Amino acid sequence: MAELDSRAADASPQTVGAPRARRTLSPSTRRVLLVILSAFALVGSVGGFYYTADAFDDRTPVLVAAVDIPEGGLVSTAELTSTGAVLGDIPHVPWTPGAADLFDGLVANRPIAAGTPVLEEMFTLREDVPVGEELEIFVTLDTSLSPTEVLEGDTVLLIDPGVPPAIGAPGRPRTAFRSLELTQFDGTRVRLFVPPEEWLAWRSLPEELGGAPLVLPVSLGGDPEELARQLNDGWYEEWSAEIVPEPPTPEPPAEPGPGEVEVRLELDLALAPSGIAEGETVLLVDPGQLPAGNDPGRPRSVLQPLDLETFDGGVVRLFASPEEWAAWRSLRGDLGARPLAVPIPDGTDVEDMTRRLDAAWRTEWELASADVAIPQAGQFLATLPLAPIATSGPLRNGDLVLIIDPGGPAAFGAPARPPRVMESRVLEGWDGRAARFWVEPDRWAYYTFLSDRLGAVPLVMRLNEQPEPGELAEVIRELDAAFRAWYPAS
Image 1 (cartoon, helix red, strand yellow):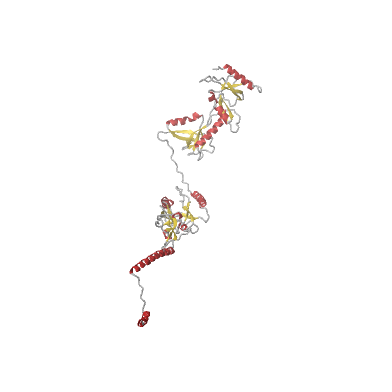
Image 2 (cartoon, rainbow, N blue to C red):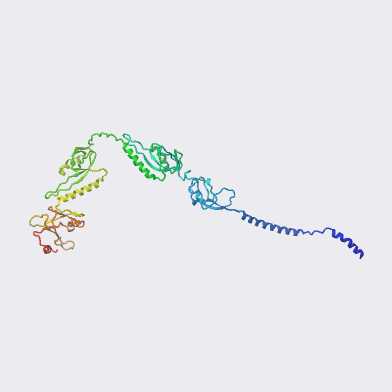
């Protein structure tokens, strides 16, 4: 026992001072633990990636092309839009509500695909490049007429310098023909972009004007059209005053052509108190004939226009075919007097002048050939043919007469129509065949077509005795009764 205790005592210090044995994992345990740790590391790295990506993905709204924009295309705000993009250091234009307005009206100097961020260097000012089919042209301008320096941005009048008149050549006046804003002007030339048709016009302008067009600035706030009108009026007056009349060239004497015969026609110049000159055009007029007795005569009337190519002292020389020659030769005898000549003023409508003269002369003739009262305003002169019934003595103006429908026989199942008194009237304008009197327009039509409606000329009968007041109606009733009794019913 003692021996045992002494061994234990001897052994105790060794046990306390000796190193403790390590605890180790088995290989299978270490493999499982490594898989678990790897899985946690993978999940953590993925989650960290997404968290850090959301934190650092700064998408910026930028201005981009909404559609494909061709080179040379005119840009509007509708062709630009915005989108979000991660651009980093890539050049771009940040989008703002007014960003697209900065490019409105500019011209693309390269093709721009839809979705491409737009930059200032992709565009050019509208004045710097042609658009679509426009062509570039430089127009040289003459600034010598301007009292002040002509600068870019001025609105000017382009002026045709004109051509001074000379003998045999009237030239043309100086004329302001259009206004132009000098958007690209270097002091002598203006740069324009215009359609092909206008390009051709500008290209040929110096040749048409005989030099470069003159320019004259329009004052600020001035009206180019009004300034051009005032200048053109003044320049036209100056040009007109300088025109040198060309000396007249004597014309060779007129001679008849092949197959023509000369005839001389003497004219009556009573209607041309100011005279008539050779070369004028006149209206040849039948002088007419005043009524005399039972001859009603005829009114004056226009025969035809006549060019006085050879005229002297009231006699015109005409060259005509043999048939026309004979008509001209007999004209004075047919008219009973020399034909009258009426000058035609410049710019006159010959047909309208003829109608007016014929109407006026016919009215004069009707008044002269009819013993009628003076018409009231708006009245027309009616002519009523009448067939007198035998009465004692001839009919005279001022007689009280009855106008009678002569009636008509039965026809096409219609009964016969006995004569009847249509009206009484005081006879006016009687020439032995017709009465003429002034009436309202509707009554004019009634009397004008009365014979056509009756199918015969109305009868006229003079009352030998003037009836007393109130007796005329009784006389008409008795006369109508006598007509009905006398005229067969069928």
